[in-house]
Image (cartoon, rainbow, N blue to C red; front, side):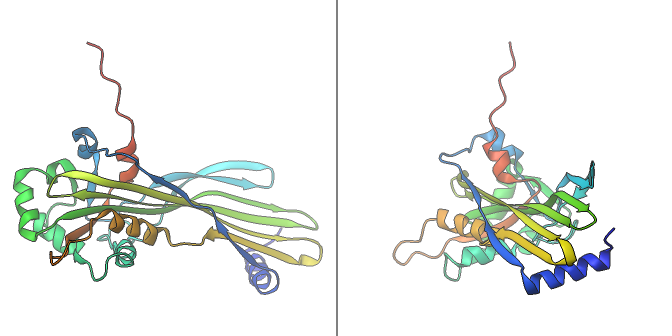
Amino acid sequence: MIGTSHLILITCIGYMLCGCTNKAPLTIHDLDHEQSDASRINNLILTKRVVLERGIEKVERYTSVTSKDVTATSRFGRENEIANVECIVTGMREVIEDPAIISTDVFWKSVGNTIDTMSLGLLLEDRYMQIINALGIDYLVISYHQQIDVESSFVEGIAEGFYGDTDREVASTVTLDMNNKRVIDAFEVNAMHDLGVGHAVFIIPLVFSIKPGEDLCHLAGRQAAEAIPSPLNEMPKPVIAVVAAKINPYVVLSAPEPAPSPP
């Protein structure tokens, strides 16, 4: 059986000798119509702190297949930290030169230091819209990023072996016009990351890696910025607030409406 140190050595040698990296295809979803009815908006939850996704990883060891609970990671920070959405903002800056952005810290201090989560429906009520108007926020970008293990495998024979790991990464943004209280864009991009380490006779390693050729966080940020109209003539730049979502806002917004209850 191959040990951990042996596997690390194989990996390092493999990257030096015959490692290769390919680009993973991106899956992009963009709503082709507004989804701004009250029921969907009320289900969008903003969060001050990072909330990580939980999931199940399929684990294959030799002929045994099991599953285990796993916790995602996020570019926004570690669980329960104040969310850092700078990777979304970086993508926005690629579209909007020197954007006027209200920081997450200022946003949450303004709506209330004791509040960690808030529904979008509540934020759109008059008492909070007064705060939004005082800050001069024209657009709100609700953002999300998670990466989670979905599968790993390990097989070791007399003359050959293989270790593989697959992760799923998701980034999304929902952009709102706060002056008109309506959704103007909802976007999601996801991709699978694959890492494989194999060897044949004489422990000659072969390493491959497949990951997105583009930063998903930046791509989601660019999409949000492109949805915001450019100011005309000498009009001031729109003021934008970027906040994190508790769960994927695109999935919430694009979910079908539940069937009405029978009378």
